Image 1 (cartoon, rainbow, N blue to C red):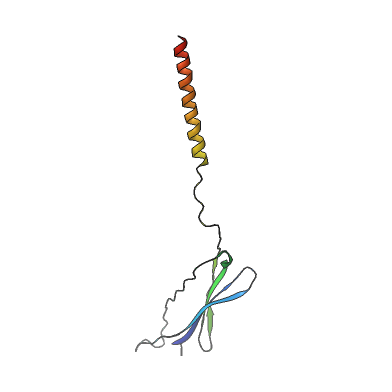
Image 2 (image 1 turned 90 degrees about the vertical axis):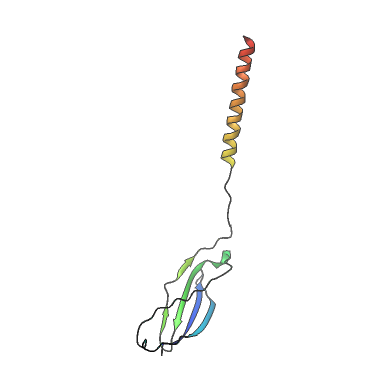
Length: 116
């Protein structure tokens, strides 16, 4: 009875709209001696590519003939900014300040030495 089932993947966006992603039917053979025992199986589904409009809660639902079970869902926040590299503004500012200070000290020392 429970060897045949369907798996449905869907997501609900921030506006509450449900979008079907993928579904498939399974027919899992039950080995002899394993009847009437609980079994756990994993079924993964990868959603690619994600876009900035892909934010929402993703669900998996399994349906047998008379029963259906839905997962707790996984919230995904997708942004389109991508990777932002490190800013080197502070490093450049510190390097420039140290360089100018070193030149200033050297110039002052040369002026004082020339005066003597």
